[in-house]
Amino acid sequence: MIKEAIVAELQKIVGKENVLTKKEALRAYSYDGTTSWIHEPDVVVFPTSTKHVSEILKIANAEKIPVTPRGGGTNVSGGSIPVQGGIVLCMTKMNKILKIDKENLTATVEPGVVLMDLNMGLAKEGLFFPPDPQSFLGATIGGIIAENAGGPACVKYGVTKQYILGIEAVLPSGEIINLGGRTLKNVVGYDLLHIYISSEGTLGVITRAELKLNPLPPAKKTIMGVYDDVAKAGENVFKVLENGVIPGKIELLDNWVINRIEEMMPMGLPKDADAVLLFEVDGIPEAVEKETEKIVEVAKKYGATDVRVAKDQAEADKYWMARKAGFAAVFGKAKTVFAEDVTVPRGQIPALINKCKELAKKYNVEIVVLGHAGDGNLHPAILTDIGNKEHYERAVKAMDEIIEGAVDFGGVLSGEHGIGLEKQKFLKRQLEPAVIELMKKVKALFDPNNIMNPGKIWE
Ligand SMILES: Cc1cc2nc3c(=O)[nH]c(=O)nc-3n(C[C@H](O)[C@H](O)[C@H](O)COP(=O)(O)OP(=O)(O)OC[C@H]3O[C@@H](n4cnc5c(N)ncnc54)[C@H](O)[C@@H]3O)c2cc1C
Image (cartoon, rainbow, N blue to C red; front, side, top):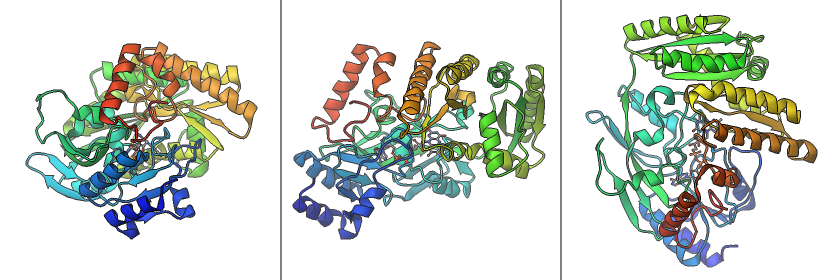
């Protein structure tokens, strides 16, 4: 429990209106995008400047009060849950786009800028920020950097770390540092900038970011491949790439997700299909036409039972709406959902999908598959109920074996959601002991009092 005198000091720094202590307000900051954990903080503080963040961290460090940075709270690994209480440092009031530099294709932003607001601002200048987590309505740039978020567009454009040129951050001691810069190339000393990208709020607080932007592509086309076997859809992913086309997006929805979406908002998806793949190609119109033709040809040659090219943007939007609704479709259907985030080399997607099918039978649980197939990053989701111990335990076993399987297939246990509270027990499975030791030393060096998001990544 934080002392009243400390709360008063926090109020002095940010103003009373930016400090929440009432029970019902604390409740609102006790969870994230998962369905497994709830922990209330002692206090929620909204800084509006880097100086505020620095002063708050100085107090927290001196008093050894846990600090959990929070953006939109949309993460799905327990990242923004204050498991040890203390301060939730909510960055959503530091939400200004400070500068859009069209000449250099960069933007300077505060960490609380919501991704959709950023892209709406950039679109007016003919620009966009490519990493596109499907939580764009709520996810903030700070959270996106701290999770190294990805999304459908990563097949062609890459993940967040490829679009961060520099950051300002506040160390747990309160010291303000600048890492990276505004240039595309930068090899001045060790690359500490990238230590912050996917640091999950455990090394300090990101207070400003310099983003790399792209011009908006002038043309786009959406293609839907329909498959009678989800593993065949998985195979189609690397066949398209092997045949020389790198689409902007390749997303997968399995039969369960297709039918659940049709139940929620009928839009004419093929309910009998075992899976569909959604491809998007973008670029100059002539290239988009040629790449569309190639995808149709390859998809048909390698097992698609039907291939539909969206005739206009309205039809394309409908298909992408189905994909965007994917997570909601799954989460709305069970009390507890494990949404996995394993990533394998693309050639192993069919093997991973078959493994999920096998485990669904073995443990008699529903495992549905959707995700960023183009990156080999699937989100197999298990529907369960934490209140039904026997079912829940079977679900946990199935989930553990999916993760083990992904690592065996040469993959990783998280592609974009991070370790958070969820995957700590698997770190040893993925990382060598010497690497774990080095990482722990990095954490201790940045945060000797372990005040930054304690309990995350490391138990
Ligand atoms: C429906 C849905 C769809 C999603 N789709 C995707 C997807 O396609 N791709 C993907 O990668 N993820 C996806 N996610 C996960 C999530 O949206 C992303 O991880 C997002 O990046 C989190 O941003 P946020 O602002 O909500 O961060 P939060 O959830 O608030 O925090 C996430 C982590 O970042 C830390 N943090 C937040 N702000 C800062 C800061 N300023 N400085 C330091 N640390 C900070 C927190 O402590 C926490 O550890 C999805 C989630 C949902 C609910």
